[in-house]
Amino acid sequence: MLKRMLVACLVQAAVSSFAHAAGPFGTIHVGGWVGGAFSDDNTGGFSHCAATSTYASGISLVVGVNAANSWLLSFASPVFRFTKGENLPIDVTFDGQSQARLFATAISSNMVTAILPPNVARDFRKSSLMVAVARDTPLQFNLTSTGPLLAVLANCASKVKADGLNSAGDFAAPKAVAAKSGSPGDAPGAAPANPKSAKTGTQTGTGFVISANGHIVTNHHVISGCNGDIRGNLSGEAASTLRVVSSDESNDLALLQGPAASFKAFAKIRDRAIHSGDSVVAIGYPFHGLLTSDFTVTTGIVSSLSGIMNDTRFLQISAAVQPGNSGGPLLDTSGQIVGMVAAKLNALKFVRATGNIPENINFAIKTGAIRDFLDNSVVPYETAEPKGDLKTAEVAGSARAYTLLISCTATEQADSAKR
Image (cartoon, rainbow, N blue to C red; front, side, top):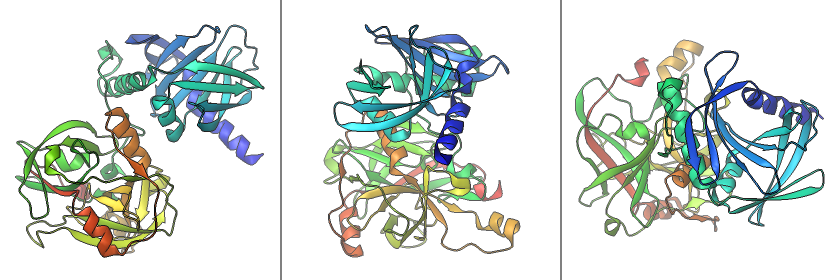
């Protein structure tokens, strides 16, 4: 009973903006979907971006992303008869395979709205057919254009939050989804594992190849401020010029691409949940030029399944990381990606706040956020199930073929440790 009450409260908080909104501002036209940006009637500020499509059954789907970057799905019809505020479980199945239960709230007599958890949003984006069952009534919905739609909605939300409702126009140009505002370096007490100084110089970090097409993922802050070419090279090999494909500052992710022929292997993402206490291996290029020119390997465990202030985008890990580890792969003991090294706890701020010196508290971006980012960039990554434990040396040996030193000349900003 307590769990149901908690879910209902979360849903109500997330969907309340749908119930008191004005618009649309600007336009969204993707396939049969039409929408735009909406403002909050009470504050006049940005509320959400949404688009609607009406099916032959007479039922309309409304897909939206609100100002807090929560994905929402609504079902509406003039024939519905709900009591405002009532809760309704809706079981959804995608392409006859993936199943999930949504907990919807009636925001009017003829509309119910549910939060889409990240994994359900991913299935919604990639599927061609959804069957929804509510009150023992099954309904079918064609989803052939929802992949491009979610990218356009994400672009709408990012643009309006950055430039205001007055900038609203045609939001057709897609942009990476920001699941939650704020970058790792902005989290209280956290600093990127690749901090910057207020001068121009060589900026380095780590990245890893994620597809056979030469796509490389790293942190946004690794390439932020780069003035010229971004270079990437495997340990002991010549550097190649990389181009920026897309970036998501809010989630501290960036997608690069190099010549596919230069890479003989790419990383695979673990397709099973990681657990607290599981062993992990972090690989990267810390203090490049001061220490070894080869990559370094550190080991530890998953200390927690959330970051600072319960930020669920992150894992807390005990594996040691240093400046330059940012963007590097975090691997399980079978050699599969379970995260991306992103930040370490800011020791100075922590000491000032608590009087204690922190030890072995570092953070990695979870694979859910990485996969959402790759899906929006249409990158053909691969997943795999773990198949037995390898020795740490074997995990590192496999990673050597796809872990790169990322470097560029950059005008660097103030060190985040001083913020």
